[in-house]
Image (cartoon, rainbow, N blue to C red):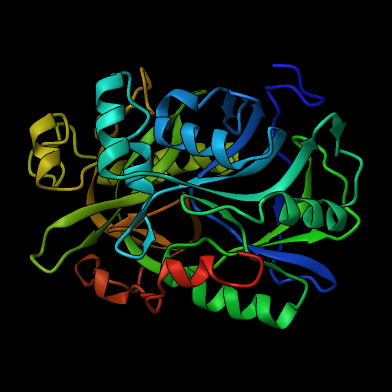
Amino acid sequence: MDLPVMPPVKPMLAKAVKKIPPGMQYEAKWDGFRAIVHRDGDEVVIGSRTGKPLTRYFPELVDELRTQLPARSVVDGEIVIAHEGRLDFDRLTERIHPADSRVRMLAERTPASFVAFDLLALGDDSLFDTPLDRRRVMLTEALAGTRPPVHLAPATTDVALAQQWFEQYEGAGLDGIIAKPLDLPYRPDARLMFKVKHERTADVVVAGYRFHKSGPIVGSLLLGLYDGLGALQHIGVCAAFSAKRREELVEELEPLRMDPPEGHPWAAWADESAHESARLPGAPSRWSGKKDLSWVALRPERVVEVAYDHMEGDRFRHTAQFRRWRPDREAASCTYAQLEEPVRYDLSEVLSAPGG
């Protein structure tokens, strides 16, 4: 491979803002694997956000990208998997598996798509210093003949339309809006774009915590909600406390500590088979590797209000943010019924939007 921009390349990133800024190019924020694709003739390399190759995990995309991208090009985009008209991140993570036979089986059963939204190189030219608005024109021209599973990401400069996308597209599993200055050059690993994500709050039960990697202080609180059968399901974690606050939490939560944890709703977490019928903390994960997922069980009595952006099935998609303790709430009243459900929106409608 001999391109003007060679792998690995770390993608340009976005910083969070509260409102959609005016006067920019707007795109949906895809909830998948960020991927930079290098194609040089028959050679195709798919690089992850960290620069590690993803090529072997998406064999069905390699063939399509080899056929549909310009013969010598570098394209920034997102790998996604759709299920029943919306993005499905869980099915995407299943691809990161050491067995080639399983990867290929999943490639046939749940094929992935690639959504392109930036052009980093074309022919013998690097486009790092080319303004975004010009790169977008070149990308649109270069991908004019694409067909599924390769897509051109919808884009607009109409802030009112971007606001409409922000409100509608969550129903298809998307994650918000990305705003990009029109004169923006491409700068790998720099946070020069802007992201606007949904934020909601929920009152949840604190049922345990994990220690921080630095020592015997709280790393994250383990959160739960009661389902329709009265079982406390692990819904996610909240973190991002100061070092001082982490120390204080150990002492503050000590009266609730259950050691041993007999009688705790998640006492069976160490039994791998228990994870098949309930959502418990410490579930085996190909992402965790040798990471210590053990945790301290607490009597599920304290309630905390947290902010979250969106759900992935029955859990928070990302780490929730601590807002305040809720001493006025009973733990048993913290159920899934309080969660706001976005109006359903079909992913095919997103991909057929302007520029898609």
